[in-house]
Image 1 (spheres, rainbow, N blue to C red):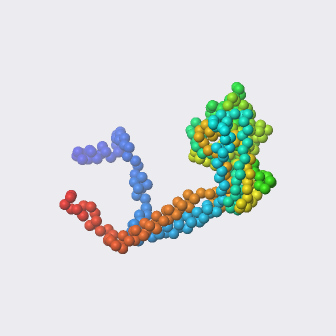
Image 2 (cartoon, rainbow, N blue to C red):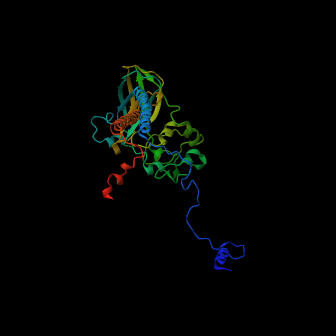
Image 3 (cartoon, rainbow, N blue to C red):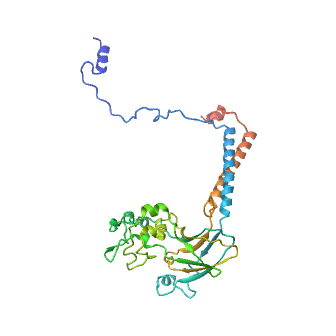
Length: 350
């Protein structure tokens, strides 16, 4: 038998009963059209006419959307009143001592002028500036299991430093609940009260799934340091919508949260007298407090950013389409011309 035949028989497999050759370890992936990027794909050729047409199309779509969005935002009527400094007595030099002294009255009266007709419902917000609800330790200081299930009342391991008080578990526990906003507002127009509806101000999913109907506040704000509002121990957490709104933490240091709704139309020139209690401490961290009355449109509240963003992108597309058109008309070039390759334009530099 020749050596070629011997080699063929040795590598031909296990037909002669010999031991199979050991398989080489390899990290090479199994071949497939997907891993090798050989699947059928659309590879458009970006001709000048095609690129110019796309830019024009995007501009034609985005500019009208931007105009409509900006018009809707400009229809929103807002009244914004900062009161944290204005509600401190004139002879007070230490604002922090003032807000922390329970014997000093925190009642304050503000007068608002309605600039334009405001159709109901009118949304009442409180706005806080320089309040970082997105701080990692603050966000984690809560117990979602405790909020849902009365059997988890003692589950306060994630609520430090507001997990227990006087040796007993706090319900609801954590820094978020402890620091709940506690300023109050009352509105009067022409000697008639404007009632504020506080029903339905929170997310329905939060009321039904995150806060239990049989979970009630217990041992709340009973520690040595009071953070904010006290809760009614006879109302379940799912009914205390101020708490639910506050517990949905904001991503940015300046945020608004819904306080309630006014179901009365306000006319241009109306004078609104606001009686408020300036209880919430923002002076220790140089924060600001503002009261906001706002209407809404199909797009929501007042926000020019969306409309301006659409207008900017649409305008940029029109500009690029015009620039490419001029370039194509003034200095056209043949598609696929090898003379434009760098090594062909400067052969001596190779």
